Structures are given as C-alpha cells and as structure tokens.
Image (cartoon, rainbow, N blue to C red; front, side, top):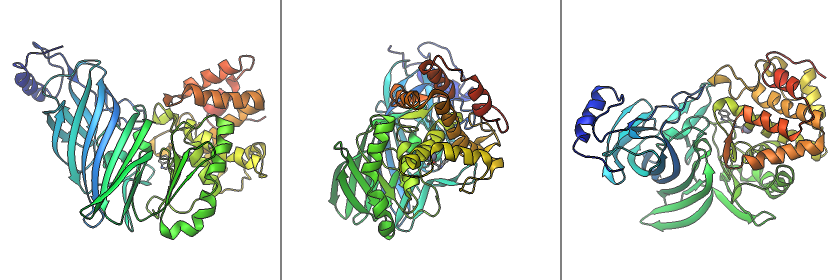
Length: 469
Ligand code: TRP
Ligand code: ZN
C-alpha cells in the first residue's frame, strides 16, 4: 500500500519524541516492532514484528588488528505494519543502514539497533535491510559464566553463539524461533582459512587476501551459526550416502583428532538409522584450540570442538543436528529438547557399541553411582522443562534428567514405538521449532493407549527426585 511521504518526517519526529510509541496520522499506520520476543530467560533476544528469511553476511577480519568489517544484508517479512524494527547487535560501530535501498534512520541502545525505514513497512511485505558495521567484536560472558560471541584464538578467531553470542558478530533477530538461510562471505589475510556452516561455494585469492563463500540453504538458528578463522588442516570426503564431509582441524589437534573424526561417516549412518534422514546438505567438524570456550557446540552442519573430541562428544554434537539444529527450541525454556536428546543419543551409542545400556546408565544416575562426576543432588535440582533461570539452562537436569525423561518414555512404550516417536518427532518438526507442550502432545498421540501423565508430572515438570519405578 503506497503512503504519503509528506507526513513521514513529522511522524518520525513524533515517534522519537513519544519514545517510539504508536503514532496515528495520515499514511503512517505502523508501530515499532518489539525489542524482544518474550523469551522467559532472555527477554531482549530476538525482535518482534518481522521474520528473517535470509542473512547475507560479507565480512572481513584480520587477526593482526582484530577488526571485523561487515555488511549484513537481511531479507525479512514484516509480520505487522511497522514504523520501526529492531536488530540485536552488541558492540561494533554501525556506519550506515538502508531499508529497501534507501537510507534509514537508526539508533542504538544496549543490544538493540532500532531502524526507522523511510517508509513504513506493511504487514506481509518482504523487505531488505543492509547494515554496515565494523570494530573489534566482543567476547560475551554468559549467565553461567561461560564465554561466547567472538573468541580470539592463537591464530585467528572463533564465533560461538549459544545462547546470545551471535549478536557480537552480526546484527540479526537473535532468537532460536527465527531461522533463516545464510550466505557468509569472509575475507581473511592470505594463508589463513575461514570456515563456516554449510557448503563452501567459492574460494579466491587476490591482493594478498582470500575470500571464502559459505552457503547454508536449510533454515538455521543464529545461535548455531559459526565462523572459524585461522590455520586448519582441511579434509574433504563423502559419507555413505554421498553427503559431503568437511573437517577443519587446528594443526596442533590433528594427531589427537584424526581417529575420532574418521568415525563421522559411521556415526552419521548410525544416527540416520535411529533418528531418520539427516536434515542438512553437508556435515563435518571444526576442531580449534579454543581454551576460552572449553565446550563443544552443535554449530549447524559443522560442530565446533575446543580441542580434539572424544567419540561420545562427537556423537552428542552430531545428534544435535537432528535435535536442536533441525528441530529447534521455540524458546530457551525448551532447551531440554536439545540436551536431553543429545545426551540420550550418547547412551544409545554406548548401548549399540558394547558399552553400558541406556537402562544401566539410567539406573546408575538414579542410584547416584554414575561414573561421570555429576553430583546426584545436581540432577534433581529442578525439573528439566523449567530451569529456574538463564544461568541454569545448561545445568545437569537439562541434560541428564532430560535424557531420563526419554528413557521413561521408552520403558513405557517399548523400543518399536519409542524409535517411531524419535523419528516421527524429528520428521514432523524438521527445519522448524518445537516446545515441550508440542512434544508431550506428540508422544501422547503416538501411543494413545499409554498413560504418560506420571512421567510428565514427576520427571518433566516435577520438583525433586521422582520415585522409580
Ligand atoms: N550445547 C552445547 C552442548 O551440549 C553446550 C553449550 C555450550 C551450551 N554453550 C552453551 C549450553 C550455552 C547452553 C548455553 O553440546
Ligand atoms: Zn548438547
């Protein structure tokens, strides 16, 4: 719908004065989009009023001056009439913002970059916005005191985004509920490599700099986007079904990683047999020397390890490709749908490879004699479906008790129905979002003759240690 441009400057001024409240008036019908999507743990993450379909990031980074220079071209659909919208971006200097090719007004407050397009956006309209920015990106310390965002390594940098880190390297709708496709073009000094998600579509060197172009066609949540810059030994191979495998390994980790990364095709095969078709177009791993991180992350198609992984951790991060990356939590409260499944995948792998059965692991955890150093009081500290705060979303109940919920379901329905549920869940929510209520409803529908109420009440939502059996 065309609008009279005459009233726009006045309306914009009014919106500024009114602190971005709605302004009526001829031709201006939009309101500013909200500065968050109502996540119970991270209220400022994500933004209201639009849905991103594509990120086109053109970046350059030089480890010598530590500066990142970027242009983010974001394609999105307006979900309401908008006079302004927000992007999440922490740190970095913005130099210029356009919307639909026209200069836009913008301002910044904390992590919110507010953009006021020249013309209001109509509900349903697809629009593009371009943000130019640069600076030294920040490392963010999480609520649980782990490090994320932009981490400098000995020979480059590593971007890790769970749960809030991606706003340190590009502006966006940084909440798992808004997934999009990506193109990441990254230019680095010649001699360095740059690895991201998806497939490498081009690599070219001119004037002492190399540009790598990475493409992710399938929807990706920004917290599993990654960028690794440095020196890597790269191997390319194919898994059994022809799937490209791309691994990038820090030379110091090569020796220790070789054997376990060689298992990727076998693990992928096992996972497809158990969870259903792999949801993405390539796979692999990034092994860096990231002492600051100290944790692995299920970055899409190409999980990141802070050093050579063991098989269990590799299985965990590859299982996340189905549970977390393809079936993505609707909010950070639904985190157990990621970690419970990925942890249970470790148990299933052990069960299928001459280790303890999932039943034995469940019992050991229940009795408090599990071989890993998890304090049993920690496992029962809170229900997996309801972490008490942002600092607890990756605590033991989310992982172990989350996996125990899945095992309780398996005990009740038997193996055949259990694997049907696991595969059906991955299939119905493929490339989408899911929450706990959606999961329990799905399970109940899959086994209508069973009563799950005790499992939900005691294991999923209940406080304290449930009685068992
Ligand atoms: N998701 C990671 C895994 O288990 C662990 C992790 C890394 C994490 N950073 C986090 C969990 C931040 C929650 C929040 O493979
Ligand atoms: Zn995990």
